Image 1: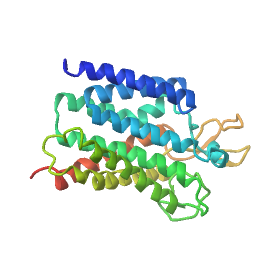
Image 2: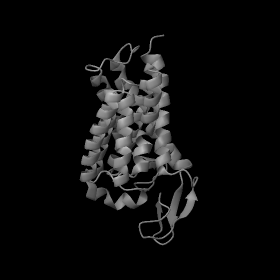
Image 3: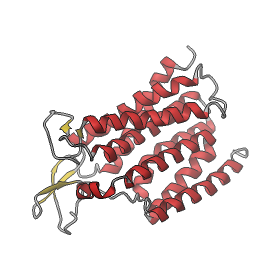
Image 4: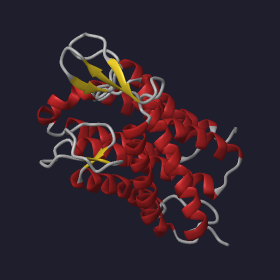
Length: 279
C-alpha cells in the first residue's frame, strides 16, 4: 500500500483536473465532480496507470458523445431518469465496479481481476455510446424482449445504429487497453495483450445487452398521466408525479448500469480464462 501512495496522489490530482474540466463543460454536476474524483483516485491509485487511463478514456469519450448533436436529442431527455450532467449516482454506477476491482487488485494482483475491470469499463462505455448514438436512429428501435417497435428512448429497446455504437464503444476500451500494454507491461500471466480487443468487445456488448434486458423487464418505468408519456422519472419534467407501470420501484437506471458493468466484468473474466490466461 505504501507503493500505491504516490499513485493515489497522482490519481487525485488527475481526477480533479479532468473532473473540473468536465464540470466547466457541463458534463458533470457538482456531486458528479465529487464522484469522478473519488472513482479516478481509487481506481488509478490502487489499480495503476493503465486502469486510470481507461477510466479517463471512458469519461472523455462518453462526455463528448453526450454533447454531440445535443439539440436533436433534447426532445428525448424527459424519458431518461437524469440528464447529461452526471451526478454522484451516475459516476458511481459507471465507475463503482472499477473502484471495487482496483481495491481487490491492490491486495490480490491477479490478471483475471484486471480483465474483469476491462470488461466492466467496456460494458458501461458500450451502453453509453449505444444510448447517445442510438437516439439519433431514423428507424424505430425494437424492444429486446418482444421485437416490437417502440418510440425512441424507450428502456430496453435496440436499434441497428445503437447496437453498432455499443460494439464501437466496447471495442474502444479494448483497443485502448491493448495499446496501453505497449507502454505499461501487461498484467502478469497474459499470453497476448492483443486479445484484449476482442475480449472487451464481446464482454462490453454482453453488458450492454444485459442493461437493455433489465430495462425492458425489471427496471422501474413510470407514466405521466398529465403528459401521457413514459419516463424513468418519478417526477416528470412537467413537475407532476408519475405512476409506476412496470418493473421494481427500487431498481433505477443507475443500479441497472451498475449491474450491467458487473455482467461485463464477469464475462470478461470468464473469456479471459479461456482466451488469454495460461492453462
